[in-house]
Image (tube, rainbow, N blue to C red; front, side, top):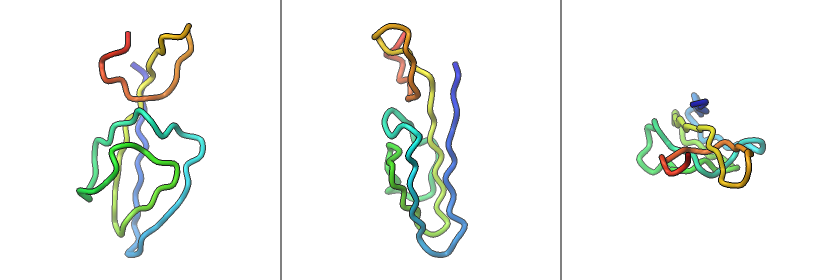
Length: 79
């Protein structure tokens, strides 16, 4: 399967906020983090605490409508 990760790191001692407009915010899986309250789904506006790290996994999934594909996390329910 085609898949990719996005790695978000804040190497500063202050919080940092930024926007991700061109990535899907749904159907992601948080696979690595160092703050217990990190959101499970990727959001368009990201706020990272000091020295926070998050890694989200995306996979190609085939939607039921035709042959269109979109990025999202495959939880095994798609063929």
